[in-house]
Amino acid sequence: MSEDSMGMDNLDALKEGLMPFFQPIVEISTGMITAFESLARYKSADGAVRSAAFLFHESKLSLETQRELDQFIRLQAIKQIPSMPNDTRLTINISPELIQYVSDQPVIRTVEMLDSEGICASRVVIELIESDGEMKGLSKLVKRYREKGLRIAIDDFGSGFSHYDRVIELMPDIIKLDMRLLKKALLGGRFARVAVQSIVDFCEKCGALVVVEGVETEEEFFFGLSCGAHYMQGYLFSPAVEHFLPRDTFKEQIAELRTSYFNRTRKAMRMTSQRNKHLIKTINGIKDRSHVVGFIRTDIEAELATIENFIRYYMTDYEGNQISPNYTLQDGLFVDEGTPFENINWSWRPYFCKASNARRAIVSDVYHDLHSGNSCKTIVVRLGNGEMLLVDVLVSN
Image (cartoon, rainbow, N blue to C red):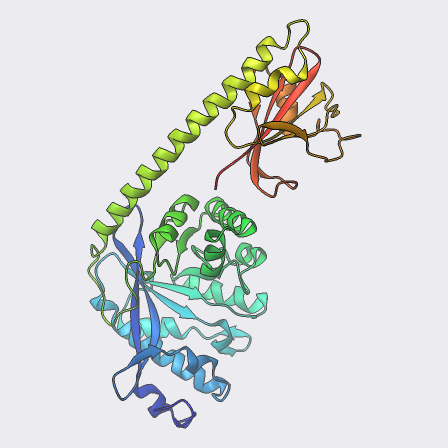
């Protein structure tokens, strides 16, 4: 039956092929399935199954029809909760725009369905999907869900309606990362990478669990781990399927992925540690001989040339005023980068303040360098000739 020939308000025809499928959500630390997201599917007369999203985005359907279809598929999913594995939850997508209000209060159909089926509300997570609903209505909705014992998740955080102010107001138990943001970050999007990490940091500080959804490749899985995600779901494990899978279905797969991530991370950290040791040893070596009479700037360049991922170096006085150009390495020679340095003062940088009182070199946090367009860090050391040496090095993603 085509979308145009269904008779858009013929509910029986619309419901005939509508059914819930379930995509597992896995816990990284144990490898076990901890929840299943209920997703609406539509089975055609020929047996082909596809997403039923078109039913809820089709302008020819009235709001009342969409609401009834939503409640129909939700009830079908809830009826299957007794067959779920123990210690798992069902995640149900709710569009705030489909919620009914009576006397300015939301009607909580999901709780009515759970009560009618004799199912404990603690087995259900309400996942609020993208909406332009105003905050007052959402707050009332979430408050009612919490009063009934339901947990709250925010879907696709980082896009659409899920801004920080809304998260602060709604205080969700779970935040699901927007996969578009994740994929941009993996493609090298600097702002996306920073955004993903800041979102995870924000969630952890707020006490919300992080789910990365739409994970399709090992690299996406590894990136999720590097950001600190607690749970993942996606085609790397399983698409949405008609029946619930056993909890330990992906335990071995996740254990292997964790081991692979651990080994590659440990190797990368070992290499970084070796580079850092050489870097600090080189900079501190320059400091140790900077007290010698006759020490001049060009004396240090042979040593700086041995630093891996070197970007530039420059000098300031003890008060942070830059007193030399920026020197970069090109074809084995140090040349003036051409960046204006007159009247530049770096004393306000936290790492400069630390280095001005430190006996050895200080390494800054990673930041974005505006001149090179790369992530970098700065090593600062106080020399014995009245100058401060600052060296910028590239940080690999």
